[in-house]
Image 1 (cartoon, rainbow, N blue to C red):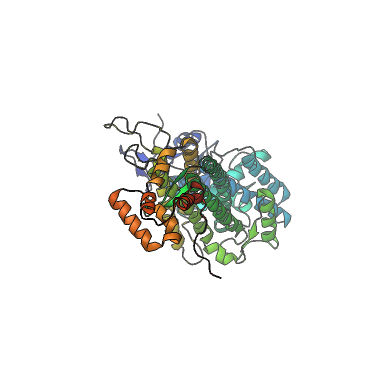
Image 2: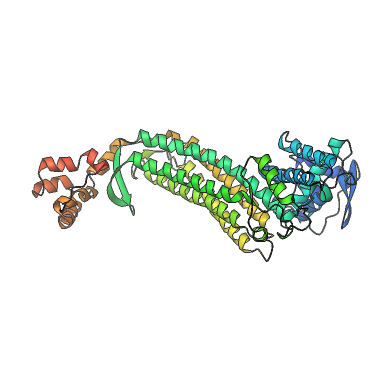
Length: 510
């Protein structure tokens, strides 16, 4: 029977009292850790603190295992954020290409590192070799070293050497050459977020198209507009849905602007932005290589010291995601209100029924899709507070809180993408209108008196509106009854065409 290791000082207890170690929380792809710790099929690796047994078939190494033992927080690991892995590997590839170009890295080593990076980027190899928790101390050092170890061991394999032969290709001296976590991690994070926003934009565009389609479908339906939940003036249901669609389009533009800030990187600044331990020409070569690899217009930050200590681009990016969530949540609020009923609410639209709504009230159906999207948006709002606090917590030349910024940003972007698809496919595309209900509200509304202001005056409008509310008579009836307008003029002003596209009827002075 395998021997269970003694708990380290950083171990946790599960709900049943079982102490968690790295052997428990690594994903199934790394389950061989148990054998490694028990003495079978392992290799020994050494670092500043001593030696550890690493699974023989693992591409990660000792630095990764220490992080696994230290950070047992969420049970969600970097394996679940493939775009961050891709971003970090692109940085390693760009660095290797640049180091070869400035003759700081031997060609054979550099080409092996590039081949290792391509194995991840193009063949998706070793994508399950990033078992570190998304919450981690050290400003991303654990993530950076996890990447360095995986690339080093893939490069060794490419050259025909066994894993762990760091005397041939070193995670630190070769893969991490001319880099620090403090420029490699934020650059990889920026790339990963850029790629994830690309995906979010696709989902937003699909939702925007669906809302525009509904706008066109409902363009002919007249309804009451409302301000402060009170009757205002008429509009078309199509105009209401077109406003929803334009909300989404506006936020897509904001997200694209946020991407432009993410394309400004501090690669080449190393530890604090001074570029310590970088050979001449490396910084520009690395930026050019990164442009080539990503296909993006990557630029170097103007002030690398400022860029290394600042997280403003991440704050701005998440703020754009939060803005999108705010708009989406407001749309969901409106959809729920417009569909309220079926007999005692507004009932202007019908949201497709998706499940029974009550365990006690028969025949009740709830707007569960807008409700769940609301809740997703609330989670994004909370993440935005975390991002803001983490950004503020930076001290002097570095902000060590970037891992939680990364976790929140990736989670928010992905939640929003799923929310858009959920709302579109399970709600928006099947919304129908109750045209008669909408028209009836208009015909019985006091709000249409506004259209008569230029002809009868505001005071007369007040009197008509007050009497209509008190007697139940319509605005039309009272205006004709009091002889304020003739029937032809009244019909023209209150026609559907004029209500939706009102003509100015006030006086004109020469």
